[in-house]
Image 1 (cartoon, rainbow, N blue to C red):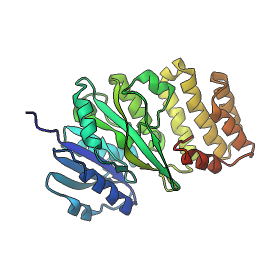
Image 2 (image 1 turned 90 degrees about the vertical axis):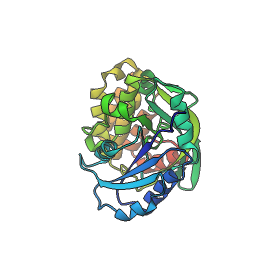
Image 3 (image 1 turned 120 degrees about the vertical axis):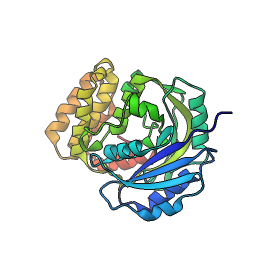
Image 4 (image 1 turned 90 degrees about the horizontal axis):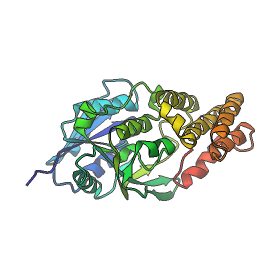
Length: 306
């Protein structure tokens, strides 16, 4: 009988000690019969050595610094390169895995020997509201990801074969401005290698809140999304997908106060897909009909983002 695989869970963290401990405990509580290693990667903050005290038999907690590019991408890669498990998972420091996540994902990966990557649904919590977000599919292709970001594919759901990270599609890209959208670029690259396996069950509690690392960083968001369009010319084959990204850029420019930039990107969006709502939201924000934060609050209560 094959022994259950060892799983390394990489948890990047930055100044969220209470939420971090809840995230780590939820990982350690998983019913996976094999060993679990949690690598907490401190980015822009001093490492908390007391986290090691959370360790249990077959449940080790390690604490390291981000030794690579500052930000989420470098932190995830620092943890991945330090990982000892056959499988590597990610979990953000403000999220929590729900019971059964690892067992279900490992079984799904075992049932698809050619697969390298498995995800699952999420339970979004924002401002007292909770919404389940799941994809009604068990496979995700590159073409599908170009058309739709599929926010259900949250980094805290990712479980990946370590060999694919080291000798396959590779680590998280550290060149993305501000590490924004690094998770989306990572998904696109992984899907180029092999379709992603997905479980249509919410196995991760994802907290959206104003302390989120990218809240209100509109200039970084705009720059990173433009970088993404340049890096993936395949968006040109998916007009609706390209319009979704350009619409996000238009909204970011409007939210940052760049009215002319918002108008320019909104026009480009409408040319690619006149039905893309982000273009009209950007125009409304640029015209001061509505505030960007009000739009985001409304979307987040529904478990959605811009």
